[in-house]
Image (tube, rainbow, N blue to C red; front, side, top):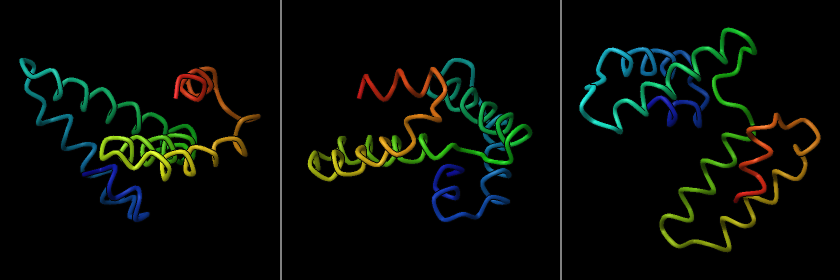
Length: 100
């Protein structure tokens, strides 16, 4: 839910939901643990950069969702936007760029 609020630029609600997901985690569910880790990462990013999700993460997330529903040409169009960000990518984002 927090990611959805990032896409509509309602960052206050996104932060609230990322914080809630840290409380809701069930240790025996792998996805809950993953969601909590990502929520913590986004909240930590916000402390340092005042951005919950980087522009790269927003583009990559959107393209990944298109790939899931087999909209491959749309995903490729979206992924091409990353080339504009390429010089500013951190090593993790750069790895995902070349992986995708």
